Length: 113
Length: 110
Image 1: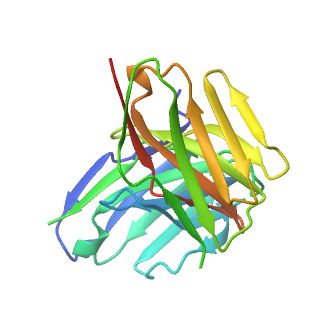
Image 2 (image 1 turned 90 degrees about the vertical axis):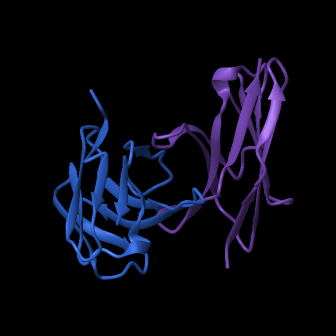
Image 3 (image 1 turned 180 degrees about the vertical axis):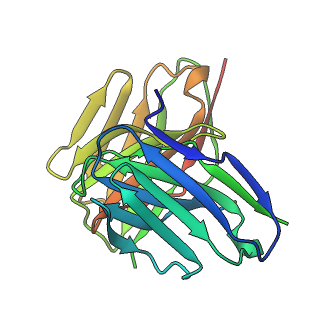
């Protein structure tokens, strides 16, 4: 069973569109994250949620809106997509907010035409 | 601001040798540090965590050191194998988050 799964794996769309990426974890973790990895492979945190509450919003444009319906899910909705949004987006989870290892999904590669 | 540097160039070594990867940081005093492995097209996978009061941590062929005076962590893979080829990321503890380095690509040749 996949621990952290995100869909879709690939997303190709046009500038200006709205899209969503879904993430689910079956590890029973309290904390979930969204990261963006750019073309230079730099992995940067965007959001973190703990027990469905927003903990970190790392100065991400408000076109990005995370939603956590329950502890096991953290979805990412992006409005008015821009060329600079092209990247790989990773979802991750950890037991809690303390110094715990993080478990990552395999990423969603978003390409904006 | 906090800065984390890893070898920006790829590291190429021969099978059987020990690979040593470096993670340096500045303007920062993390309480712990983690190392991850990332394969192409996959998410990072956790390998080891070391705390500031631990000088060294081992797991099978992997060894991590943490020198808070030098502000440096070294990651060693002994008896390296082609299957160890991947990008290795160090990550430092931040406030309720991890701060990742840019990673070092390791290539192990037969």
